[in-house]
Image (cartoon, rainbow, N blue to C red):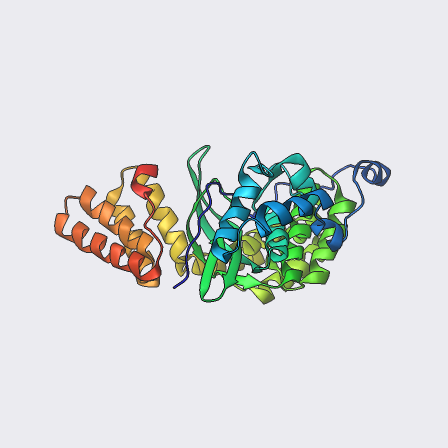
Length: 367
């Protein structure tokens, strides 16, 4: 059975999914200024390069220090996180290359995962990136519940399987979790940087990074969605519509893409198309268990336990394998005084948790 090796630190992901557009007006940033302020886009080799001094330390402090694979893996984690080692700490201000993360001692989950992959492979491990396009997460700073993408590292040796996470906002659950190719892992980097550059108003540099991401993986919906946002901000609504259509061809139920396309139709004055897509969006939401769970949580927080019960019941009907949904039913039944039902759902939540090998999070305390 896979072993879930959770680290002492965690991180928020990966691909930045921009779900709405505030304005379609172009960002007024002269091209010459962009070229002067934005460093050249790094190649994949430059993104993954590890300083020679760090490789020398890795050889002595990790590879030669521990003979057994499991002890070496734990030592590698310590080497990356402890102050005596690389001392990496979580910082989501920007996505860094491996060298930048090491020299600055800061990384988000994507930079950390790329760095871990490079070092662990040199330490003899079979390591790949693992992604989940939907991770339900508590933002610890403001106690906000949100759904976003998430990446981590997957390590295999012999019959052992480990997942290495770096995230202060521990995901409550992750859906559609799977390993990805190195090309897609690199596409995540360029997509992240493109979104960050777009937020800074650096349109030309952002487009260059989006192009590179799509060259590596033309099917990445988050990249297509983000590129659509960039085109809308530049005022090119026709090109944005084409990109959103490509994204929906890959994932016809993507709520973020549909929301952006609805905004586009409204900006174009195509209100009938916007209304038609809004109906499709509502249909997609209706069959999404995470949507019902989130609405249920909001109702629970406001004290409307009857409404929360209805949404949690719908979430369970749509996905009977998720312990978190059963746990939510137990909470609201208890709040409504239905003690027998609360015990029944809590027992089922524990059974599902044991079956999946994933501990139930303390959601009640978070709420």
